[in-house]
Length: 489
Image (cartoon, rainbow, N blue to C red; front, side, top):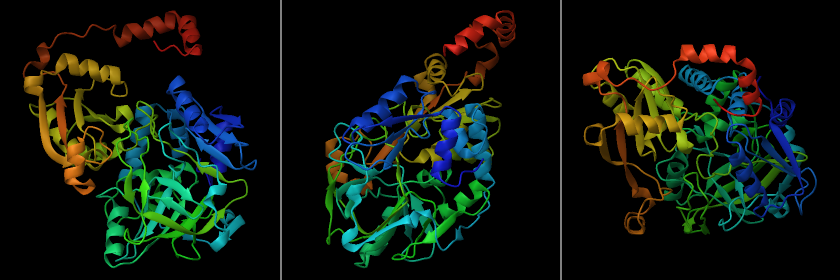
């Protein structure tokens, strides 16, 4: 099922028991705290949260959170059976992305997003219930699950990215263009000429339309074409009356604006609780978005995707970025790749292989380390045998502590693509290098059985699948009771 807007997705979540409504919450920390705590209570089974009647705001001005933080809602957003197993859902996504055929958006004249229009002195971003998500955030952030839409100042292609937006005042919000990513490159081009860069930002849209905003696509490839491919039909967009930039016609809240050069205007931005589980970036002077127009639907919904301390994360259910690395491994010719997973909120990449030759694991690790889905920020690449459940961090760690001899099975690759969000960077490095020169290193861990004596490796102490199946059949009522009580056996 492909959803035409966020409201259809919410209705379906409600129908299958994946939604919980909360009335009367506060934007100052309460929405954020409940989002985090509910996700932690039951990592894989918790519901999405829809906050309404937010204190101090009109009824119907809502915030949706925990949108893609479990397997069922991830699968639902992708348009497949919500009960699809996690690895199969990731395989579906990998194959879908690998079969990419661009489907450009379809331009329409109007849409629900224009039900309410405000320009000039009528602009007021403060009217929306933007939460202060984390306890040490300096203010509200309206842009977490957003789509920042820009056009290349030296070309015609459109980029869509997810960039956080702190609220400063009625017509000014922040933006954090991370070095090396497309929005930062576009801003460099425009600001080098002393020009402001036009921008459109959507703060609410159906999930499959939003997902590509957080991915690494080849430079020059428009996420709007990818969205069409994923949906199997063109995304209907309208052109902003002021910027000419396209955005979803069914979006909940959209702004048109411009980003002036830093010497014209900047603000101290951050810090913000990040997906690493730390405050690692800010406060620093950053560009601002000056808002020239606001459009929103009746009873608008903010699409909230706050970063949370791992293991909770925006893709906790299915780490979709892992598919890029999986695809790169297959296209490079690495044989017998069983799967790729990214536990700990995508801070580690784990590759499963069936070993076929000496050096197989190291070859897989080197390719994975340079793949789009792993190259940025990730510092740990682990390769395991196919008898390890890579969706289980406990199983992966068991392989590391029992199959990895550190002296022989670990390598460090220096000067890889880092990030200012890395909490392990020392204050001295941050000050000396600046955000555009942040580097890290990668550890490659071969946690496979040593291939030189693979056949003689000690036998695993685990009841076989054959015996397990027999016990499940013989003691069916026991296991059904345990399942009802959410006890995993």
